[in-house]
Each structure stands twice: as C-alpha cells, then as structure tokens.
Image (cartoon, rainbow, N blue to C red; front, side, top):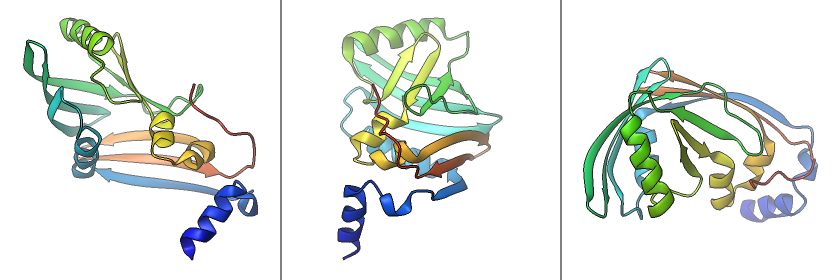
Length: 178
C-alpha cells in the first residue's frame, strides 16, 4: 500500500508536495563509509581491501590494493575534501591528491583511461578525484534526490563526515547528469 502511494506520487513528480523543503545534517561515521565503499566495489576486479580513515580537517586517508595487469601495489592516499559540493550539472564531491603524489596521479590516469577500473560516476583528472552523486543516484533509480538537492556541504571530522543538505520539491524541470 505504501509502495503504491509512493509510485503514484513518483508518477506525478510529487506534485502534491511541491513547496516542501527540508534542511538537515547527516552524520556519517567512518564505518558506514567503509561499508558503502565495499558494496560499491563488490564487482571491481582492480581495487581490493579499500579502507577509509577520517582524520579531521577535511583530510581522508584512503588505503587500497590495486591489481591491474602487472601492477600490484598497496596504495595509501591522503585526500582533501572540498567542503562545498559542486552543482555545475550534477552534484559532485571533489577530492584533491597532494602535489607530492605526481607518479601516482600518472598511474591513476593511465589505469582509468586504459583500464576503466573506477566505478561509474568516479573520475580522476590530474590531482582531482570527482564523485558524481547525480550519476550514482540515477544509477540507483533515485532521480528525485538529484532533482530535489539544492545544497550540500561536507565537514570532515575525526571518524565522521557531517553532511549538510537542503532539499526542495519545486516541480521544475528534471536535471540529469550529462
């Protein structure tokens, strides 16, 4: 019954809820992030044993084993998360590699362009790692969240990310990642 109501609302693009707005703060513990990443990479044959440690001050330590062709290495990265999510065409989280990871940037670029080992919605370009939330949410059949998301900011704390969001149902045109 509830599922039917939701599907009816979805069919009308939630017209009965136009004007609704929600602002919130979502604490996401490090353990939950690691669980989400392990599920997202379950079918990935290149990245293994991925683990994230949240150090605070927007710094995330990512450790993983990468195995592609003859390349087999345990990699540890310190990434810096931009606090504001970019909304150019789709909500995108941006993380930056330190300048000192020049060789790793080159290897990541080669592996991603030739090998295609990153999950859909994740891109590497130079020092920049982008996670396209819009593309990921569309793939998970959650287009409403992309349409309603008006603002998103991330605060990195020790052991936890605080995600600040604003959602609004405005009944406007659909946004879809390019």
